[in-house]
Length: 242
Image: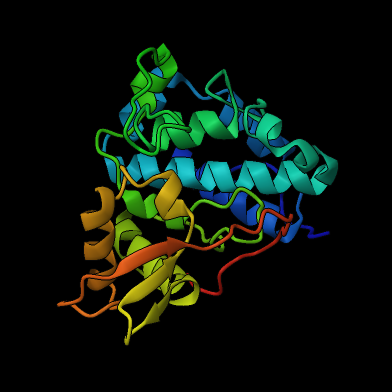
């Protein structure tokens, strides 16, 4: 166990969220940081997170840290993972939140988890409306780690470098997970593209994304199939990048 101070001495909620994830990675005590996050003022937090890049960096770090910490403490919770994703595991600015609240409500901008990226939540709560992103960035799916083996690795995200970091995360994940046959123009792609295909702009948006990252040729019109998702629990999967 590290002897680093456990109390948060940071000027911003963004720094506290990043420190939370870093302490979880190091196996350090987080009680003071969790208390600081719970005691944040909701209006002040919204004022600080005044852009989508700030919101994405903050909430992605919170999501990944809270899941890693909770499941490391009690891996059996993952046995009922669908119930776990709806369980309140972190308090931010007085609001108890589940992984689904953060992913679908805030980072996906009030989209339903089961709507394939096409169905918005018609009744988002006030906290969600206050803190959700204005525009969904599908690259967020390559940054969130719910504990499954097939999830992308975890990085600490910085709002000032977020666009670059999400590009790196997207390219790395797609290069590892997509299998493309140049002869048949067929791509086996992660099941994330099926579950959230509306987030990516449907079939044409998926094709453009794969072309953007050099996974398929620019002039290709590939057919798709979806790879199986490995739901087995795999904790501590952190990327070796900054």
